[in-house]
Length: 111
Length: 114
Image (cartoon, rainbow over all chains, first blue to last red; front, side):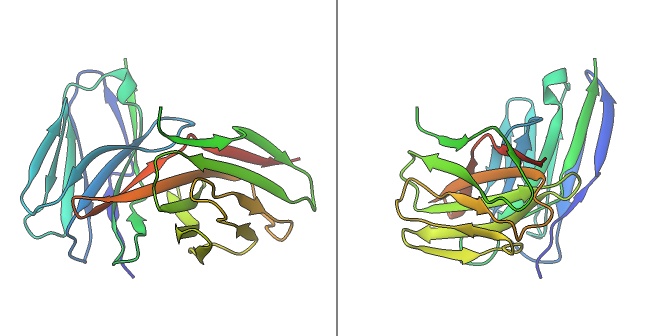
């Protein structure tokens, strides 16, 4: 079945550092979604990508839809303590309105 | 404010007991979903519903049941047949945007076994 391979599994960084994480698959997709989950809360959509090669920013976050349509990355610049959480990539699983999810990248920021 | 409301935030279940988790949305979304989250395992789909009075099993439906009698509501029952119910449960609803299926989540219910 379709799988999303997300890496790294976890990161521990100093405040102010930049962060990069990615999501890959053997399948081709038409969208890429990036969510963030704060501890004890539900995931919140950060960025949605709809076109191969698309580069989209949301404040200090930048995400790109890979040109092969099989991967995407998310960058966070100048990290701050509130960036702590789990970041998930997700994608549509065919036409049945389900999403498939990566296992997440857990980010810890040392003030 | 529009959104998805899950209740309760914390729930305790005794052995052999059924418990029901509530999920209500006022976003006028057609589709609703239930996920289970365990540490290190990401989000696993339990059940989903694309329309009122219809629902489909997800990847881990055994030991769970749902109903979709109203568009706004999609309650999840964790039955006594679910032998390892301790987890964080997330409800979501979705609409199609720009060709993508954007899901919006509630704040979750943490279920523990006494």
